[in-house]
Image (cartoon, rainbow, N blue to C red):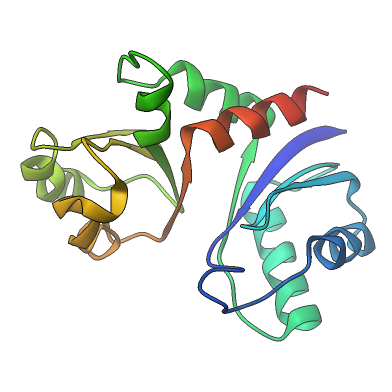
Length: 180
């Protein structure tokens, strides 16, 4: 059995697509996943299972959400090993706890094309710092995310793939849960 992390996009945000974590755990268990654990209310799940690949796992969870809760939600799947690599590949030096609060990782539905990477170049070294490594985009905000000029940029449209972002503390907590 392998350990996986499901990052569900857009649930319990702004009073929309409300899902109780107990109901989400129950739904995942009904799909045959084991040792299902959730972290906070924003669609972070660690689980064990036998998979036919990350894409098939994501599709199964998306179908389960559609059937159980009645709405669409994108799901990005990473293995525990991949999440450890996300942490190891962080391109930014974090000076302290305050930097950790301003670092976000967007988990992408696929790798970016060379054209998409080129379209992101103007945003790499402004006030905020942006780097793409594999299927992750790291952003270190200079200030609060909501005050950032980069927050208003339609990054998904520029990239051409869907994404869901988590702060650095959440990424590390999910990795720790997968190690348990």
